[in-house]
Image 1 (cartoon, helix red, strand yellow):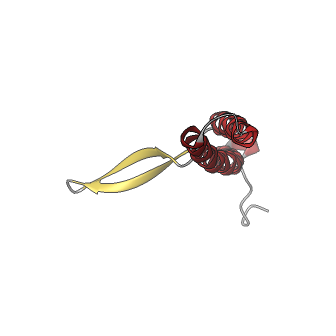
Image 2 (tube, helix red, strand yellow):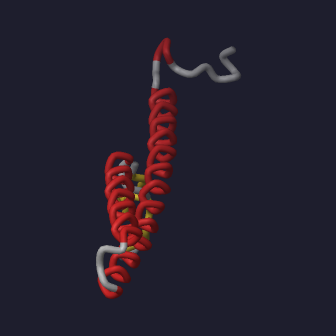
Length: 110
């Protein structure tokens, strides 16, 4: 999930780790919570139990929650893709490190 980047600091290259996306569980938790808030506030607005002021606040809350829910689902998808690509990259590194009889055969030795 983290990918090293190189930056030049004081004439030396430093590697830093940064996160690109949320973890899948965190993103889904955000999305589901926001969706529940959006549905609840939409239902309260449609029931028309409150005066205009509170209804407007609930409508704004519903709109914001729908947006946050969409963000959470997109982040969950990105996190799943990033996890899969990280796993492939790690497997490729392990394959390239093998030595002895398990080492990758070069074209010259084939």
